[in-house]
Image 1 (cartoon, rainbow, N blue to C red):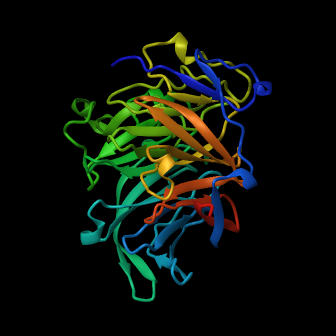
Image 2: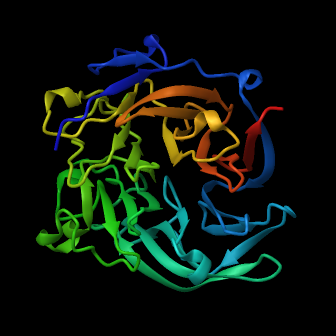
Length: 379
């Protein structure tokens, strides 16, 4: 595959040297009175992690401690969905993502990800599918829940699960499997840590995966060399993009290519948190390089491509929530190149971003008593 060019952004020059070949300065964060949208609080949740809209316009929200909430936006009523799997709560672990089967309107199948306990103080991410049975009052349950994928191997620690989910235009289920803060497994094909996974909707392995001939867990893998992927999404052209929380000064946005190796922990445009340097991407051209890197970091969370009409100027842009940067970041694209175009100061850590049925942007803040915000154009 061809080498991908690097476009880097830095929020300010005082935060350290830029280590990339083509650096550019990120736009200053836009303050609340300058933002082109109004942010309206709709509800609050306890440590929310992900959300997805149902066809009727209501919302499913995961809470990290292990709850799945169903919010009726018309009435404001919230109901807890029963039948959720037991989660390994602690550190970065707990309840993760929730997405709908592409044919949800017919089969009512949903997919959830979560951290799962193992033996001898180990944990790993798991993905399960279930049927969502809703009652007329908005309550409901997950039924016939079945685990279809697990991180291999389960390891100690409570960080870097990843477990973001997306269905592609090919109808396949894509999973981000982060490297659990263990570094080298991202390059080890005997396990699926530090990889992006592609499966059929029942959890079986597609015969056309790039490493299918190797068998075992390697057959699940689409790409490798990832650290902590906390957002995956397809653009309007069917290309898969992934944002990655990197080491110190090394957050990334990557265009995901079949069978590609993204180099971690061998290369990164950041360094280890203990100060040990990591060679930059340009020192090892055999590894796929990021399209955008951030130093200072944004601590990315969530990723979506905007296709609505409420904000026509943003059609085709991607949006990423910022945790440490307490921001909403807009990324613009020119073919297969990308750059940070705008950054909006939200004043709180942003965990998740989605597009609503009417084209509004929806954000989940991070932490306890976190707000669900609806962003609409200013009048």
